[in-house]
Length: 497
Ligand SMILES: Nc1ncnc2c1ncn2[C@@H]1O[C@H](COP(=O)(O)OP(=O)(O)OP(=O)(O)O)[C@@H](O)[C@H]1O
Image (cartoon, rainbow, N blue to C red; front, top):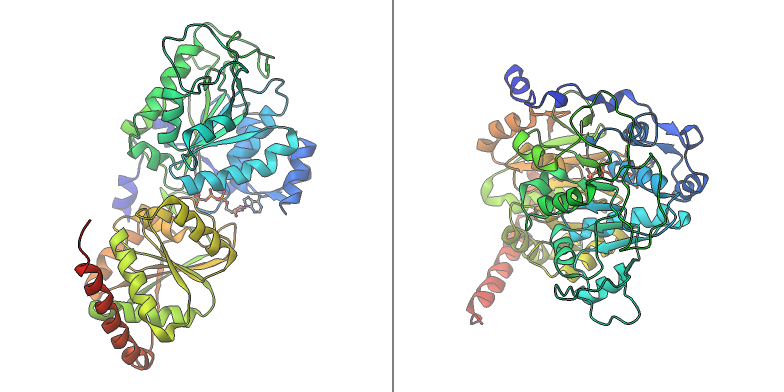
């Protein structure tokens, strides 16, 4: 354990002395300083009466006395409420804007997560007259553009033409944009009138995932665009100028200098968040953070939700599906997420489970091989409780919030603790209880125990399934296997297109 801790001492000095979120308490809405009355009632409409600790901590550093003078990095467990932690201050800080411009950009790694984040923003931003847009590539580029940019009446083409020299008056239709990196780059490169020059706030959700993959260099591109707009503009704090787009340049937030010497104001204020925030200086540096402040829950780098119980289920490799079936049966009607190691395993396992006639549980799959429309439909049905078990690849691990998931099952032992944290984190959210079962063979136990020692709350109990239940299911399992083999041989015989 001592060795683990030594390894996790961050190289970046500011990461060694974080603000501990666990010391903050939940705060009733009526006690939240300066909370806009419309924001308060929007939250109440959502059934929210208290802010969670991470939300209180971020509020304190942005709207509160911290005045967003430092960029904020949040490392807090899955399901702790990070989405509202950034959405609330953004909406509050934009509530007194006069003209509509794109002021806040939220970048997330996947489309389904972007749709979920937009829903949260919609609920709290529209009562304050703020509009939220999506750039995720769900619809055609032209349709998306028409939702984001108001074209000048005489201008019919929507794409950028470098030879077009006159400056038509485009108007942003949104104040806040939730985007995936690829589609964001499409708009930056090709959409006429799409500009980041008025941007005040940048949020990078699931930061470690977004920094791991370059996605057409979206981050350097965004930062470069902002940098080139920064030169020579300085206005007092909290000023939002009426600006006719194209004629006036933007004014960004300025703050009271608190002994920070090396960075000119105004600046783009940033929030970066994850349940497994990277400590790698080489990655963090890409964000060009301004005197970053780390808000972190607990001591260790990884922390599992308080009300999560982890179990290991030791089984014979050759009959692993049989153990999964027995486990699913024992969980009854409860919503369940089953994670496998790859898209192929997801597909195969889902097919096999559906061959099992006695199971009487509706099972569907979700993987990045499927078309986005199919995936979103499956996810919506799962949210509504149309079926109980969703088999998924790691495409669903990040950020997805599905109410009522009480059980997560790792059909394959995750390779990394990060993967365990995000998979298990689909349950035990917002203070609810949840269980995570991991199926493994005897020879995988040692590695799994070592993995779990890397996370706070990583203790793991044994879960046993009686041999009589396994025996009772064996005949149906064998006939399911036969059925499955027929299906496989038929699909293999189909000529390849
Ligand atoms: N103050 C609150 N009171 C009650 N419920 C809340 C509050 N804040 C957030 N929630 C609920 O908690 C759940 C988890 O929130 P959220 O998705 O923001 O977690 P997260 O920290 O981003 O998790 P992950 O790391 O998995 O992305 C959501 O269903 C959300 O509606």
